[in-house]
Image 1: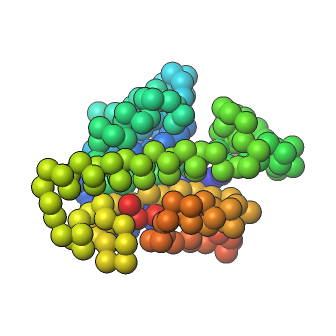
Image 2: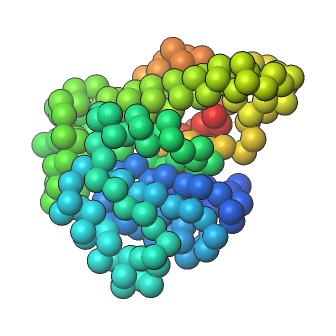
Length: 219
């Protein structure tokens, strides 16, 4: 739950300066702040579920002199707002450190972690599996990719092996990246989830403690 700078740095390694990026569940704003500092031409949108959180993130961006570079929105991933945001934008990079603590594991967390807001740990909905935010984000992002492929293929046919949204052995990903922080205990379930969406182009990366901590997916 404290790996935000790490996931941001790993994403920067393959990102270009003039991309469009979305941070889901921005919290204190540390990820978009880092993006704005390292990729000054990056077009950044950052979302979270209420005004209190967004106001905190904005204050932090003012302190770091990057406020004008980030577009903040109040938006819940389970809302129509989120679906509309994904449908209306062609984000090159989507980053999220979502709530992934299972409800039953909340009391077993270390004292310092338990001091964090409950919404940051388990989320605003029942999260018995720890997967509900990953499921929702994948559902919307990949549904949008398939929908866009269908629309564009009708308007302007292209060869499948060069189309940025084609899924298959010869697909072209066009350098688009979905980056998650994950709980190592969820790896098996996350792999099953990706199998359900027929996602083949992904990588699970370990943190400094040699634990599976990051999931990167091309879309």
